[in-house]
Amino acid sequence: MRSAPAGWNRGAIAALAFTCVLLVPPRGLPAQDAPPLPSAAPRDRPLTLAEILATVDRRSPRVHAAAAFARASATRVAGATKPPDPTLQLGLMNYLLPGLQADPTLGMRQLQLMQMLPLPGKLTAAGDAARARSAAASALAEEVRSDARTTAAMAFYERAVVLRQVAIARETRRLLEDVAAVAAAMYRVGDGRQVDVLRAQVEIARMDAEVLRMLAMDASAQSRLAAALDLPLDSLNGTPVLPEFPDSVPTREALETLALTSRPMLAAGVAEVDAASADLRLATRDRWPDLQVGLQYGERASAMGTERMGSLMVGAALPIWARSRQLAMRDEAGAMRAMAEADLATMRAATRGRVGEVHAELVSVRDLAALYRGSVLPQAEAAAIAALASYRTGAVDFMTVIDDRMTVNRYRQELVALDATQGRAWAELEMLTGRPLLAAAAIGARGGDR
Image (cartoon, rainbow, N blue to C red):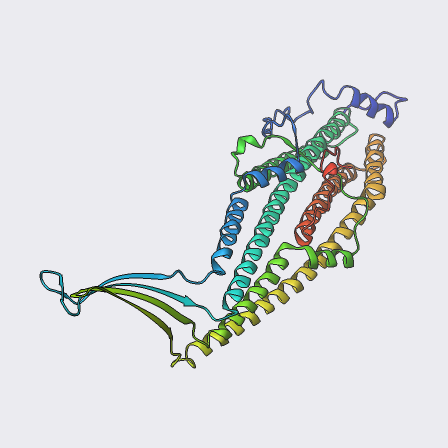
């Protein structure tokens, strides 16, 4: 290999190589003409979290089904407080067959009205149970709405992080192409190694594969988001934009208190306990039979004219099987109330535990993201720039340049993932507390991968 002219130092050689990098392909190596990577679906507008949540409220089949069930439950309240409908009977007594003529002596036409009168307290208990179940259905409808919004928010954040990671990967690929160009140019002038050029090309190919993998993840997340919104895929081509997150995180104790007092699922659990208590009161009163009152009017023809008669009837069922029926129903109602209370205690414990987990994750993610932005990422960027400059002068080897650049890529990817994790944590806390924690005005655009 011909040596460089006298008086030239390694820095000058590197500068000349960097200047003429694109003119001639590396000796012994084919020119790179890789097929272009597929691009994501066109995204000509921002897609905000506020738009996603509004679409969930408007279109989600789960939300509509739960709301319809709540309305259906509310319609049962009025009927539960009313006694059974009266029974009206018309009878033709003692008519001769086959002519259907009234017997001259016993033939009679009768009209009978019967009404069951529940004992005091039964209708009140039934009404209380129906109202409690209606309240539980309404609370569960709100819980379903909150869960549907959280599901959509999770898919939204996943799409946001994947697309931003794709952009970072493409940018890293362009930087790797620049590094590969430097290595190729130094190889041409005899100041570099062929293995460095090959290693750069391997890293570029690996970034291409990473972009393809992330685009597949975006398609999967887009499908989940479309399913949550009940929309076709081609209607979600906007670019997801992360919202502005609050500057501070409420304390765990404050979030627990808010969750235990405001979460719809817990309100539904309380209502179910109230309904079970009302059922128990009703079952206790069922030991005593309801009264049945009846009025009867009859008339028949006689030699003296039409004879009219009236009757009054009072009756009640005889609870001869009370031990195996009424008392068993009371025991069943008591067991159901105990189950409802246990379910409520379980939901409260699970809510407290999950609030603690998400709060700890949120605090950790915010602290780690702040560390990345303020210290780790700037230092990694500076190290990568310094490594490339040192490689041009021969102070460091090529592996150091590649490793430092890929470290920057990894940190940027992790920072984007931390932002999305923070968003998912806020979304889950909103579901757990039943309150919006991101201000409506803040659910807007935020650029960059800060």
